[in-house]
Length: 130
Image (cartoon, rainbow, N blue to C red; front, side):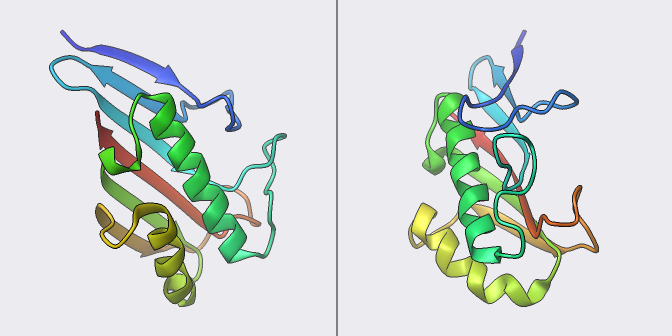
């Protein structure tokens, strides 16, 4: 029977109402990482209005979550990206490459009307196998 552990990386805001990540341990360990946004240390938006800075903050939080679960970015097998403006797509690709190199994991990008706070411009959730 698998063991299910909810966790948050120490360097990432840990909201009281949902898990930032879930680690499933058994034959293989699977990490289900909640949508990461560009939180400051109080749970607000760290870089309002700056898509590039928010993207780097989100990917840094994603990296911290997967490392806290025992993996690396290379262990991410699926990523879902939500943006409030698809025109930022061209800016997203090169920043994602900074973190993942030339080949990112299986990915989906969806434009939505809003995220949990009006200052958030991007959110990324992921699944990793470690």
